[in-house]
Length: 232
Image (tube, rainbow, N blue to C red; front, top):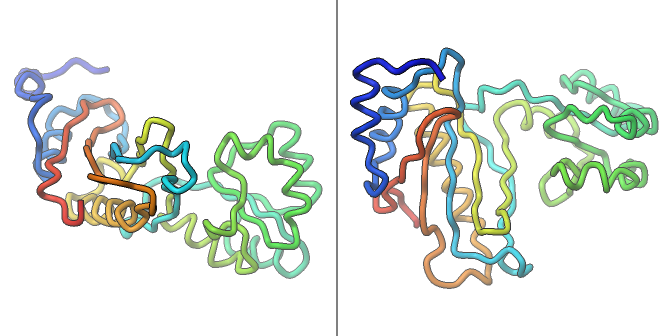
């Protein structure tokens, strides 16, 4: 990390691990203590009152961030015929069938999203052990198994992100880049949190969103005041 200025050192020393920051205040603090030259990602993590080992407490879904992610999303599509042509025209990075399957089996898995038409799941199913651990397995509940490949590609490249709670009850995601305006990041934060709240599973008991924190790629983690966030 680059050397901090006197101002940045002072601000870093002022950071209070026990303080609950407002969202706008946290964003400003992360900007003030930034020392890197690259465009860092702003990340949000939530500690949820769920135990994902139980099926009725799993939290998983998709959310479209209104300001986008600032990331170039690579999309692979399993499709044939007209759907393959539509996928190519819609901007998919790779389109294929058995040839795409073989390419992935050979280790070419540099994708952020894998989409498939329903008729291709027989082929995609052979890749379960490769795509599953990477969170890339197409799933109809997430909209990644669909006959409308154009819409799915547009959503993936336009700011749609997947979320899934981890074993410890933590769920996290990037919500944009440091170069975004405060208004853009706040809109993405609100959309992400709203999606998590709406995805509350039937088995969740007691307080659902227990803790919210925000950080940048190379910056400190700041606790966000739950009282400022509606619905938690």
